[in-house]
Amino acid sequence: MAAEDPSVSGVSGRYATALFELARDEKSIDAVKADLDKFDAMLTDSPELVRLVRSPVFSAGAQAKALAAVLDKAGIGGTTAKFLKVLTANRRLFAVADVIRAFRALVARFKGEATADVTVAETLNDKNLDALKTALKSVTGKDVALNVKVDPSIIGGLIVKLGSRMVDSSLRTKLNSIKHAMKEAG
Image 1 (cartoon, one colour):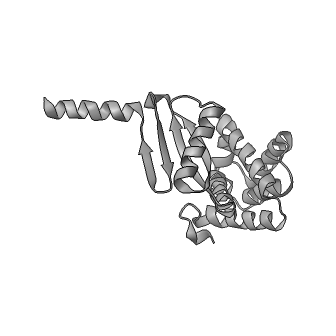
Image 2 (cartoon, rainbow, N blue to C red):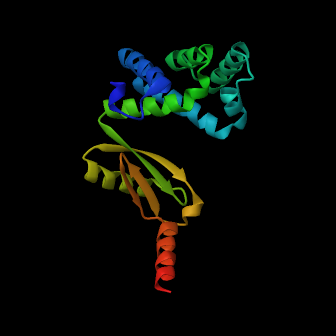
């Protein structure tokens, strides 16, 4: 199953596949995904947590103790907490972001969804997000989950990457192409 998707390979793919199969058997895919999303958001918001996860300086015991406290405080328990503790015990916690990404890909495939990476200049409101999901569904024929990243440097517009296709309608790209055309004309 993991070999079908290039984003689900290597060590992180094996761990994600094992977690996915366990969650599927327990009928807890949505709960595990919600917990992993919560942990991923915590990584985004906390440089200290990233340091704990990535640094080889911490012993497995110290990492496990700190992780247990973080999970307890965040209310992450059950299968997800056990899984993150196994990653820690096996000294693979540094790969957690890749494992989460691979797990999301497995869930999306299981649910018949596609995932699009979308870069926008500023946060989209719900109406715009729904319109984007509808447009992408009409193109793919599948429900599309969005990974939205805000990058003010694109100035305006958006960049959408869906599978191997990418549409760049950012203002930055348009301005660069105009600048390039003017240089060639001059």
